[in-house]
Amino acid sequence: MTDEELRIRSYLEAQGAKLTPAAVIDKVRAAMADLRAAADAVPPAHFSERPEPGEWSANEVLAHVVAAGAHFGTAIVSALDNRPQPPPTEGRGVEGAPARSAAEWCDLLARDREALFARVLRADPLAGLERPIEHGMFGPLNWRETMLFMRIHDLDHAGQLKKIAAALTTSRTA
Image (cartoon, rainbow, N blue to C red):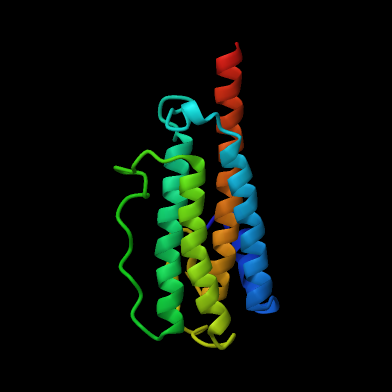
């Protein structure tokens, strides 16, 4: 792991141990609000347009966030329910993604996350912490750390969406 990845992993571990599940959920919800605001800033007529060759469109960014959220949400529920972890996902969630609006993607994400949050809040806060959830970059995480990773992931992609919005807005007015 790079120094940055080690720093993030340390944050996930420390905050996962310190925060209550309700506090973690509040942080994830705040990140989701930032993600939605960033997505809403992308010009709707250009939502599926890539700002540069080789870069993702806003549509692809949100397809990825929703797919990653579904994968890690399933992994969290599996840990809480003492079930085997789901297999690793193929691809990044952008392959063959349908064209949707920012609102449609964000509503899908909210629906999935609210179901996850309800399940987490029903669980014993200490249940399943010994059941690892594999992350390709950060290694094994417990379910609380994985929830916090979802927050960081949302914030990272909110930043990406802000850059896309700026690029598409600038290129349209120039």
